[in-house]
Image (cartoon, rainbow, N blue to C red):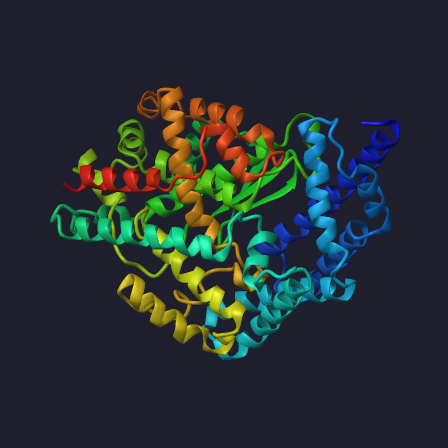
Length: 504
């Protein structure tokens, strides 16, 4: 870099750090909103968050950013970290400068208000009074996307804002293959006659002491290399992970589900998100926009790697089942490891996405992907969403939801403005299978699982992926780590082989 370019970069980095800090302040308010805020505090909190959004937009779209990027345009003599910050800001600035400040404020207010109203609707199932708030939010998201679309479809624009790295058509093609694999495995398991009966899995639905559940889950997190001094664990209705600072990465769980393993898999999933962020917040990128997960898609690949490929594997439970029995001797009396494995890997078509088994989970995401594309292109109206949801659920999962609360009102994503996010979960499954196969060639993952040496897996992933934060785009990060582009055959092979062995 020339001296002028170096000065411009240092000023851009200074602004970036300031915006990252404001983002963390906003996250503190959001975390409080979801956990302990008073029932009447929602309107004022929406205004507070809207104000911070407007401040961030004003800085992000400011004249100075444009001038700095002009100086840094085409810079080549720079580190990968420097090039990445310029790349990230060029993309963000080109979008932010086009979006009116009032729209930013309106969007933030609409999202926070809609989420607040969703809390109420989720309790009473009153979609008729709720949907106008959702309708306004969808309209504002479409208006925002139309401004920055640059010839793309509105949905592709929303996918890009979520850093999915894929177009809607590419996802549709990948999901077609995934759906075939899933339905084949579902059919194979259902026809095997090897699934546990309701009586055999009844032990999962007994009364389990919550404090002991916490202790068992925390032991797994500790073995994963989770840094408790950089995090805390809250209890909420819809679990999430939030980044309140480089050393304040909050995760949440819930204990309301009747199946004891739901909480275990929730905390491992959210712990996977947190471990990724802990690895990304390091060195010189800590406290910058590069010191975070590369994208929602890669983030979900890692949370679901820990949840499924680690914590649902037979070798994992070979180590942890005896420990689980020590914590809960009465509930597990007479239960052997094979029965337990078939119970925690039971395949069943259910309503709730977050409780879905590893196989059918992808169908829940395909359902949401198909519906949100129609919402965004206008062929599906917000008021008609419950009926469309029921019809799509019947088609993909073979059943309608038991209630609207276990149907369209079950997820927070659309209610807080996250459109183009849901595909990340299923795309993450494709990615993590490839990451796992590559890792298995480099380290003995079977030995790590059998001995509860999960930190060995965390250290490998940190060295290969996490420590780079957002420096490399998803496709480049995956190719650097595995040596090849995304190949969905890894997922196909993994799912078919695992369930063939479990339910022969």
